[in-house]
Length: 56
Image 1: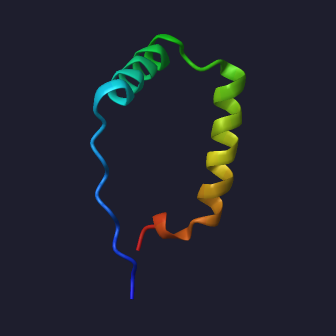
Image 2: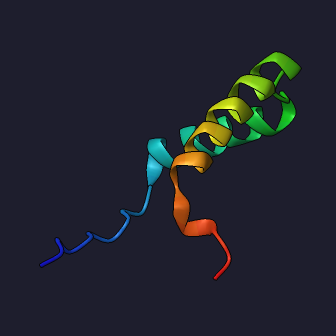
């Protein structure tokens, strides 16, 4: 039997402001080409292991 997933908590107060500021900064500072290539290499290695995305 699967374990129930708890609902995502709502951020309020300082946590919400900090999260929103972090999101704004992330949007303004794009990822470097080197970091992007590293992330994509990891993604491709995981995609190879995951066989569920194959067409039937």
